Image (cartoon, rainbow, N blue to C red; front, side, top):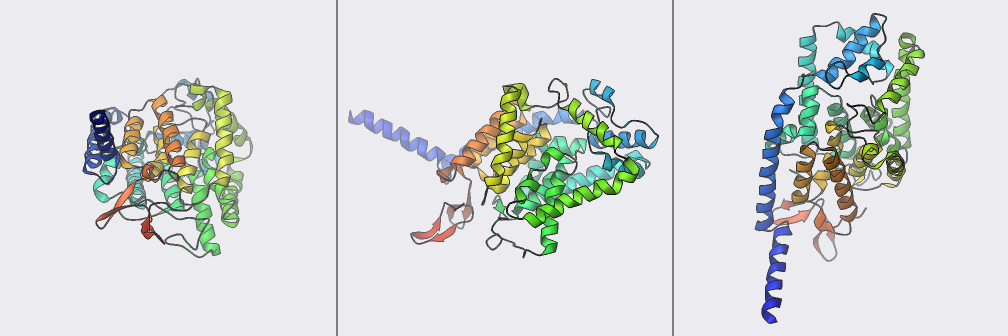
Length: 401
């Protein structure tokens, strides 16, 4: 009996060692998972190299050219396409007058400049999220980032606005929130001046300026920073109004019709709508719940939760949309985060939604179970993000919400 008990205790000790983040066994496990992630990324690269570079910029440029020539930018016939620059234009009409001068420039020069800018912004975003320099190339080659960079999708720019709004740089791998609802406590705090509110409002508006289903950061900002949210909303409205002499109002009806066609889950290029997996009623309920929940989100994980809500509330997600899960992955313990990154990299819609669900569940449980959160080295110790002084010891692994 004692031998059986001793063996069970030995196994329990081994399991504890493997899943204790500061242990050599867990570091080996994490390195092994990282090596597997590198392998998955490498075998995924050839498929991205076959894509047309800058195709997601070419689509709006062609729409602007059609519109300037008196044609229809929102072609219903474009939904017959499944890939390439012939895909439908879905951005709002106010963008068209701004694109017309660019569309007249040499296309190779425009695409090269845009892709270079996109890449520079992606590098800045990684550093804003405290990704160390040595890991930046790997993160940029991770399929959600690689897709956005190869296609020149504006999501890369919107992620940068999201990162600037919710986070400040920390030590390597130490994701540090700005705590917009607690300005006196947030690192790198700016006083609540009109200029500061304007910047935060514009950043929140920038996340969804071209994709209005991504305006949740602006909605979230309304409760802790109403002046900033109002400035962001007014800025969006002002741009649309300023462009009305060029676009008129009829074009907005065409745009809404186009969005309605794009919401059809049977469209081959629709991405991975949750409705296709669980049915429209459940997907709608999940989206409503996600939108409602963000108004109750506070504290250090606000950015991570808003990122999850952006995915759940979206009518559909593509690979580059999974970039909004990146802050949550950086919060969670490394072995779990890398496992989820591998699932996401396989570009299976079911795996995407499983990853979102697991990440959300782990983030929700992480306040009760701090071991679910990533720990970072501090001197010779290993502690949780933002260690705080407590009366029971020099540091505490748990942060108050």
